[in-house]
Length: 488
Image (cartoon, rainbow, N blue to C red; front, side, top):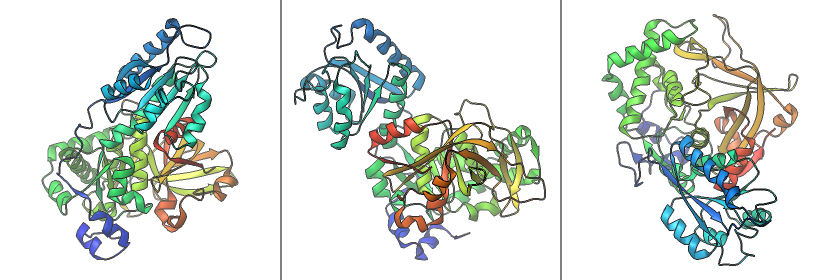
């Protein structure tokens, strides 16, 4: 790894020639986004009550629709960054008018309210063909028995290449989950991520044109020397306040002294300023090891993730994009880590790193307890040893090649606490029991990595999330046109 080089020096070395080509088309830091809306603005979702509800035995009556519309209103309030445009449609013309009202970026939540309300017996003058012609992603909400027959067409429609998923359920809470996943698509189109090579991961993930085309995300380069410039002029009072917060809230301070923590806090405040001045939704830094002597950025990465701004180290754009997608979908951070291996004796998987988030259930959630430690590899600085919740169900995920989501689940059974004077690799570690350790070991990467399997970081890293998100991942994949590979 290039430890102290600038972006220009790194590109000039010729290492990983694809990187030089990719970074040549990065937007410059400080440039304006080519999106018309700010990332903070609400995104629109078009809600179509499909068909002509009449209250017969094969359709939703007004009484049936009342709890649905009530729950949609609650979802809008709960999600906060979503605005629903709601109307009824049973013809192509009615559907087109609703879609126009919602705007060109609005995905669709279609409520099946009549026996053939979505398809009208596969007529072109129907709701779904009109949505498909505009290539919009659509989630269908269907009430079993009374919601009609069109649910059985969702799989064939998807096999034709349409981005569609089905919530076939009597649980009204699934309306909110559908909306939370639909919003990912327009939110990605508004997202900008600040980056600094060298990059790791599958090549597509750090090719700006491909990232923009596939996901809509804009990659913005940190200008040469800008990190140093900001750090040299950092607000010392803000840095001291940040350091004090880390010291006060820690369960204990093992190796670092106050100056180590202050240096790390300066790095954290520096990252905050870079994020703010570029209106950025995420950060991926490949030169973090070269920054360590001036102040470890690991605390800053933890803080950004806690605030809902995904921050990935080691230049891993696969993981940064994974974290961005899941942040938009779940409003919670992920723990990016090195896979420490699969223990077939214990049926467990190990994941560890030094930039672990504390608020694993979202920005408003309680913080996990932590110790302040020195960085185990560099033997200095200040990083966290976070003690995640024993017994917690977790989902491990990673987007590769911009087209495939790798995933498996587990349950945390151990969070090692390393005594002073002992080194155990990266400071925060979790050990998760998995369903089939032998399968996970044999199927690592699921055959989806291709030649990138030989890139350590493309193969090694995974992102851990509190909760079992298997169903949400599959729905999201249907909406985004992604493949899902269950590794274990």
